[in-house]
Amino acid sequence: MARSGSDALQRIPPEDRAISPLQRNLARLFQEQGQFEMAAALFREALQAQRLTFGDTHPDTLQSCSNLLDLLKDECEFSNAITLSEELVDAQRRAFGDNHPKTLTGINKPRENRRGGAATS
Image: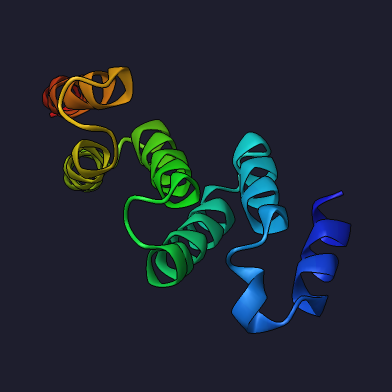
């Protein structure tokens, strides 16, 4: 399935590929299969393209940021996860305001990541 998804993704024009749901879904599939480097590359490419195309506060951009954040935490890349988590909270504040549930949930993620990072040191 991953191979056919990769083949289909290659047929999409480069300017459309990174904002395609296929890219996110393929990245999730790689993540579930334990192919974390492939997943991370696809998540990063999607996030970068969505930031350029839609801006930091677009729902697709926020979701891609969250997807990459989850992968970084799974891979115990806590320093990168903390930085990305702080960027996500900043974008959520701008998109939803300080008291929105998504913003409030996001505020706790850097703390969780710091605890996780401290636990592995």
